[in-house]
Length: 466
Image (cartoon, rainbow, N blue to C red; front, side, top):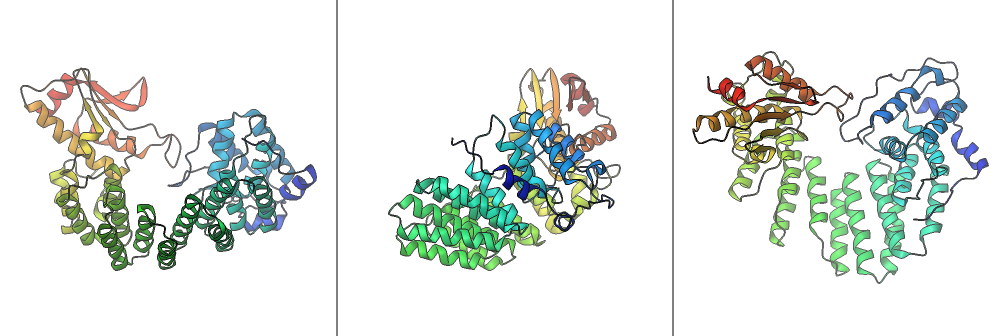
């Protein structure tokens, strides 16, 4: 990896001492004003999960003690990088660069943080990271600073066509995710220039794929289809990636006729509609509360033996308003699938029944003479709720069979909240605990692992089969 320093000391002072007006525009009140930033740092869905040390640093960066003194903030950042391992520093930077960050008011300091990271002994220059930082600066309309970074990257990569193209692909993707039209359009212009002059099929294909994906991120799937047609003219065969991008682009906008037209075109051209593609369709229907269409699509998947996944559960159940409403009160929500069905509307009943007929529960379970384990990692609250009820019904049926192997221990892994919106507060763990208490379960939190519930297998059998 290349090791370069992108900024001189003088340039650092220019880049990293923001004006009060800039800070205020980012939602930060300095220069004697009261700091309005909340002290509690929450991880927004889709953002890079924060490590414990990262969480602590960002909370301190929000401290009123730093209000009114940008120089003190920069010293605080410098001290943090100097005293933190590589993984923690990069974790904070990645979180601030994410378009889903829960801390947009602090993302202004991403450039300051990056500058300090470049001075660390472990620093390796990473073009993808540069692309993400440039996109963030474009979003913040700090175009002079983004151009400085972009020029440096270009001068270091232009000698290698493939590397430079991949950098521009990352740049287009990052700008589209940050919704920076100016940055995205500039990246596309450069990608088109390269695709027109190169003889490399690989370079051409990557350039076109990035333009298609970026246009869909920018809610321009019709323009993305035009780019796919350009690929055909260039004798390049569009792949599943391009079609999935356009499919989801139309779906997110609620243009279901166009979405299904793309699905049909994929099938016509021999591309299999897989689980990932199916989840995109389901997510699109769910985002627009089209539950009847979601049910029809699930039935189609069942007929064509397309397996459902954990993400399918999350997508479908998060779209069921009755389920999400019931989970607002864990003291009164139903505790069995059969009881739950009596609360649901017709469309929701169809969705839940199709889910419970899938193999997702089996894939989340392990069963042996030593241990019977259910792992809820990756499940949203609504999915954990349904899976838990299925699991109780399922192991009860197992235990009813005289030939059933009774594990020495039964374990339910809920997680301890490391990746929750508030670190250490796991909604799934709270749900499982409440369900255990309400059903009179003998399972208790494992003292060796606070993210798990545990009990002897024979004790669980007696509880379920009494």
